[in-house]
Amino acid sequence: MRNSILICFKLLVISALFLFGCGDEGKVIEPNGSDASRTGIFTGDKSPESSKNESYQVKAIEVLQTSKYSYLKVEGEGDGLSVGEPYWIATLKNDFIAGEEYVYTGRLFMEDFESKEFGRVFDQIYLVSFIEKANKTAPVTATVEGVLSLADIVSNAARFSGKKVKVQGEVVKVNDAIMNRNWIHLADGSADDYDFVITSEESVSVGQAVAFEGLISTNRDFGAGYKYELLMEDAVTIK
Image (cartoon, rainbow, N blue to C red):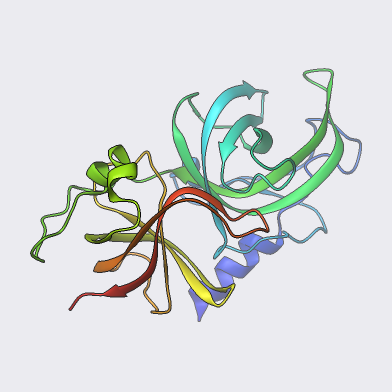
């Protein structure tokens, strides 16, 4: 119960960094504990638009530092500002590196956001309350006969398209009950730079080790931003 209250508190205190006075002079609540790379919490009366359960994995392609804050131009998930295009996020200052991948949660959208230290206005940006490096999955030892590595499928997508295959790995993200199916992101340590997506009616949890059998599809567009060059569809778990 105490942990739940703490998580909710952290998410609810995200702010607009510079809503009052604009710029890099907003009052800051420093993160608790020594692991400052995991969180960026700002004061204010705005609530985040996404919760800790809604995570976005991105790659930093540009990093700008001020005395207190880090601005990251990123590409990847959560690109609702301009689908398929890089976008900006801001959080408490830390040693972010261009080219590294990060996962963030709890964000607040801002327009015409001014950084006084840069003398720059960001047309659109997300203020982020929690961010950490993306974990790389340790190579998975297959326990099911006939399992293919994700790297093999990704590098030979045309060959496997339209065929049923078996995969095994760790669930790294789940979006349940969208378009009458669950969207499961799987990693097996062989192609962690690729977001391998599986659709299924079965329910699984993040962190769960699981094997699936399903149909490999290419160039699928479900609408509403759900467009994939490669994914596994109608998958069932293998016991």
